[in-house]
Length: 326
Image (cartoon, rainbow, N blue to C red; front, side, top):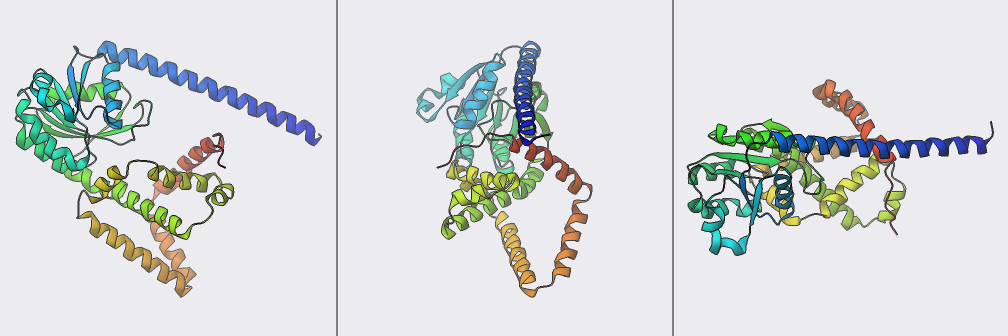
């Protein structure tokens, strides 16, 4: 069989794959529309919801989601304080979606306008401090939410939302149910446990990415060369670094600086990084392999699971149409 024939067959297969991917996207969209219609039908009576910071990126996403569910949604911004009493007086739910460094202050200002039966929630990526502030200043139902995704997602289907019970959970169960109906993966966790996990999931990861990006900027390699020489997995890793620097620096500063106790974790990470350099300089490959095996043993069955999961991700990345970078 000639090369031309094989090439033609390959093009046909690629065309079929593109058509199947298009069909898959269309079917997923239809399923989401059906799920949304079901969510609208099964939602309880229309709620009056106020999103504080609703014109921000994450706040506007939740405004859209609540509207799609058929609720009446108002946006509250800095210029609305003079009308706070009117905007908040009949609210069934008030969601605080403001920068971390302003959250506690905003909560303290809001509560004097809230009826006792209003559900008060926040979307902050730390939970202990905001939840404590809501419980202290508001006598009604309180819940802490942390959407584990960025505001650029089209919907929250299969997205993780952590939530921390505060007070009177039966009064905000409709909110948890609504997020579940939209396809979110709800994870109930204590505020303290949440913040400890975020030190590893967010703080350490974001700071490591920040330092990696800073190192690249100061070493100044030609980024087009890095892209052209990268296989899908390295291209994906580079994309994740670039993704961080394409977003709001205030958000990441707030996350990293949110708890000074996290700095000790980062210091221990730096110490282990330096120990790794010392290991390389010693030339002891057997010790390197032993420590590699120790880490693999710690991951256990998850190592193989993550290998398989990453293959699926890389396959998807392989079919992704790359942006033209000049």
